Image (cartoon, rainbow, N blue to C red; front, side, top):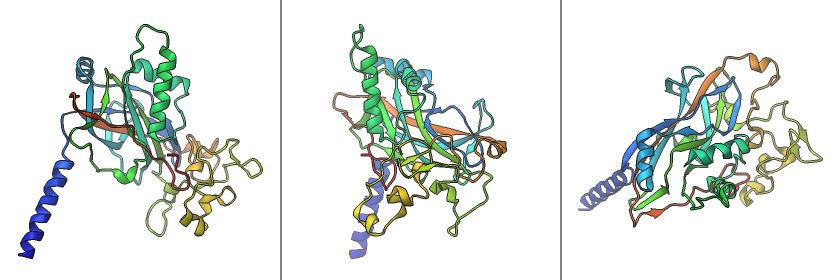
Length: 316
């Protein structure tokens, strides 16, 4: 009898999980522009906005769109044109630290991208970036004929390589709701580990830890790295990490982590303006697959994701 109850409970749990992970609505896919990276080089900023497929733009022009779920993957392109995807990139070749994306209007995303030079506090949670973007749109359109606020969808934030293959499905009745969308702007933090042979005793690349190389300039008096205050402040470790005297909790003992993983730096030894630029270039990016339907009157809108980007300094 007990075995029968346990079996029924297992079947119910499996059925519930299957329902919770089943995508709803119509799918569409969009890829980022290729990112050219040398071995050991880091990309950590917004990618150029890309238009959505035409049929999605037409659907979104009719009624508000409800994004019910999505998948994200790191891909390797054949070349710099980005016309052909070579493969789903092995994570031992290109590590994804974290990602995010805003789905909105090109007329808003493009000037936002350019004004922020392709980057706006890429360490921020997507909830913060989402709010910054909405404020930017409001400020640029203030006083113009059309001032009605249009909703945008945001995904990702603290999501990274460990979530590859994990379906992001929102519960029935909930969705990211967006109005009249036609474009996406991705945020990508990628590390090219291809061609770097060093591995840790555990069998993974130490580059995933973003080691601080001799190229990083630490100013201990001003508490700056490469002449700038770290995007993620120190002094936010939890009690247990402080008891353990984790070296990443303090500037003076910092040897690896997000603060040494800014856009354009290398996480392998060498001259960042010399020999490291002679290595082979690989072209990586991200492919996003969204599932959507038209929003209903009772569809509940989800807020932008929170939480990012380092356990020694959570920004949410």
